[in-house]
Image (tube, rainbow, N blue to C red; front, side, top):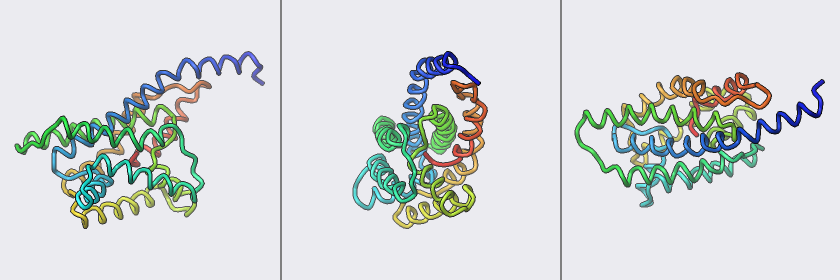
Length: 228
């Protein structure tokens, strides 16, 4: 049975690893928002939740990033009856991603050439996968939408994939009805984000203090196909 010295050793490893984890968390969240901005400027169809964010934003006259913050906070309130526990990544996700979306769309103006639009879409999807791997590998908890899905999975007993599909179909339908952009980019994102996220989870995995990096990566991979 490990002694006190081993416990101290693990504590020191956790403290030394904290700066890297924090950098990964916030770099991942900023890049996630930036990648969404690229997809928005590509204008070939948005990610499922941003279809809703755009539709609501057009209706009430707010930016997609602002609506993302408001919707994320609303989703977080739904954690209460589901008895989900937020982490640092959960609260940070609500604000950082929305602010990064608005910053990217402010810097990057709309484009018109199809080749450029396709390039923005592809770069946005790949960057989104990398950002997902970065922030999930930091192990500071899940995003508000991930927690909603895993909470419903736990309460209903339905598979995560089924719950995810049901929620995303609902938000896409609602967003499209409100005027959100649905297109080939939406389908491409849905097909590519899972495999990309799992690749980048392996690349950015941080060894746990007790050496359980593989287990942590496997656990994170289940949530990697979910929207932060």
